[in-house]
Amino acid sequence: MKAEANEPLSAEVVLRDVAGASAVRQWFAGRGFTTSAPAGVSFSVTGPRSLFERTFHVDFDEDNRPGRDVLELPPPATIPDAVDVVTFSAPPDFGSASY
Image (cartoon, rainbow, N blue to C red):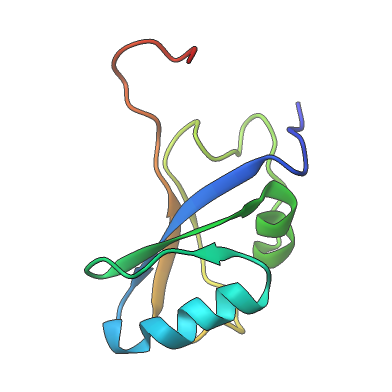
């Protein structure tokens, strides 16, 4: 089951070198992502599902989709070296999942 291409997603960009945070944020912004301010060794990026799929050369489906489990995307070759991984966290495993 394929989700909507416009479905908004957010991921955490984990840096291996915080000194490169500005260049990495510019890299994502230049591709159409919205970026948050850095917090420690990471910052968030938000964009439509189709933008993540195009940027990271992935195809999200029922077995491979953000929000189901922890999902890590290797950084694209063109991204600055300061990036360690881009990750989607799994939803909390408590309470109702239907809100």
